Image (cartoon, rainbow, N blue to C red; front, side, top):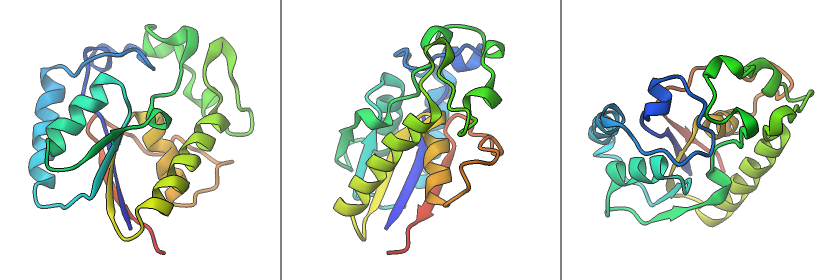
Length: 179
């Protein structure tokens, strides 16, 4: 089985370093171009199914990437982290080290606790792996969820630094899961 993770294309909030969390922002022109470029890179890749967050920026990304050639399903477990009172604020107000410390599991300001993110991501993975063995699944989501899946699928220690890798707009990674 293979899972290809994709983060949505750029939005105006991304461009302006504004925390968007679950705000339902569309892609901007740069984001659409990023998706078109990634579509070209993935044109010869066969996906059996596509799951996506229900937010418009991920739905738009998924449809640019696979259009009507792959059956797509929105899934609430793929929605971006709830960033509570920080949504709509400048990015510098967000203390990533604090909110990505698995042991601290901070939910200050109404931010969704990191352990809750990992639980819903594991629940989604358990579902997909039981339903789609031997298939290639495209998952279009957000940076926090992409990061959680990355660590879960690579079996990383969750008590270490979870912020090592950057996840840019339209980041894409395929991970093969040994059965």
